[in-house]
Length: 88
Image (cartoon, rainbow, N blue to C red; front, side, top):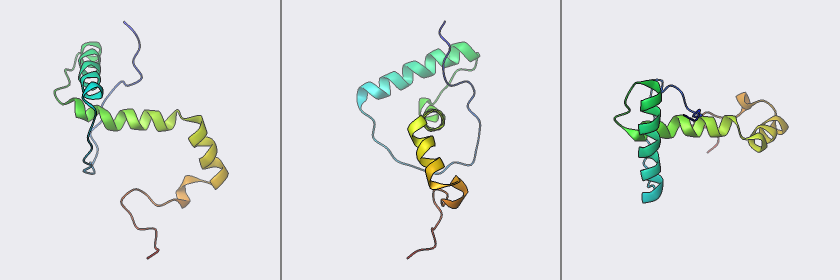
């Protein structure tokens, strides 16, 4: 069986986001959840829970984004999502 990029889905304080997915992407998400559930032995009842870890993994492995972050300085200077930048 292929090694998936996701391993474990951790519980964390969520931020509610509404997103529309193309039907094919949703089917792929459901299929991914089934494969991951089979690999881990823990069925994933809500494939939507995979979206956040997938995005996290994508961002962590995006070399262009990492380079841009380094050129901006450390990411601590950037406001966290959902927080005010102090402007306005």
